[in-house]
Image (tube, rainbow, N blue to C red; front, side, top):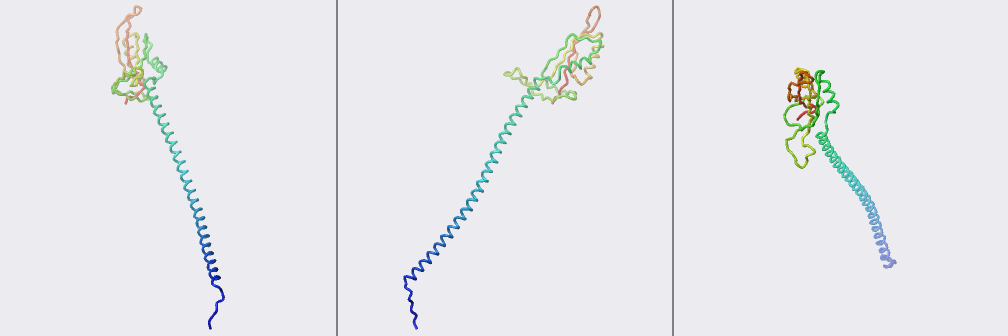
Length: 219
């Protein structure tokens, strides 16, 4: 027995067309959903990368500022070192009152000073070591002279002390020299001259002694 199909072909074609439309719409919806989801993922990744880039830029800026600060500090340290070196060259390391106090202690009763000279003199590289315990450290360079700068010396200086006076006896002048040699506050003690002299019908000894304040160590 043969079956008879009463459904027209255009109806079947329309139903198939609707099914294709449904499948296409479903695929399009899936694609749109995937694209939206992928867009969220990409946006999140871009935001994360942007945050990392901003962090790197901030760190770079901090590093640059620290580098500038370090350069500025190094420049200030170098300037302070230059000023310290300049002060070592032109400033006296020992106060005048301390030198006078030590001299007044060492000079005996039978000695009268007529002249006391304190003068800064460039330290010569003699190789001798000073014994002053609390002395500063100075570095002595070669004896080079710069004609363009006669005010600031190239080498540090030490204080030269010249004592001129009279002693009641030659032994008193010799005792003063011995005391100057024994103290740690002076070095390079030398007698410039010693000669007899008559003062108010009395025979005395006129002398001149030269020494240096031992307030440094030579390297």
